[in-house]
Length: 138
Image 1 (cartoon, rainbow, N blue to C red):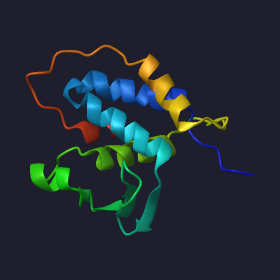
Image 2: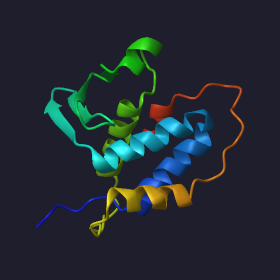
Image 3: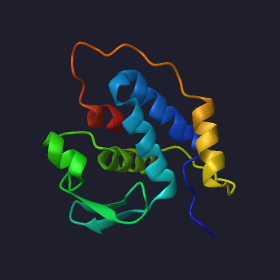
Image 4: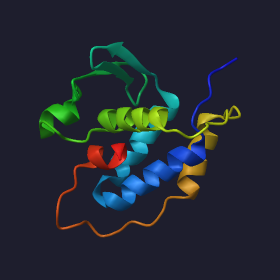
């Protein structure tokens, strides 16, 4: 029997809440949700994780919260790259006290179409920067 997984609605709610708090990260949040749904996220222990890349050809390691992807390295420490966001979603959904129903098998295109059909409204960027990872973990 496969372990229970978060429902698509729970992920959509989490992404929507994060998008309202950080509208400037909308694209990264959507890509992070894609990674969470369709790419492996593996704990290597000792605050080390592997997150599958968007193209599915490689993994990026996140060590003590720092990602090894080009986007993170280019923008610097604390940057919310899609791999760190996917890991934050993964951890938030795993730590939730909700009872997760099993998902019915769906094709990747069906999942992406469902997410695209409910994009939410973009809001104007806040004048004060928000640390996204803190928002996801609350």
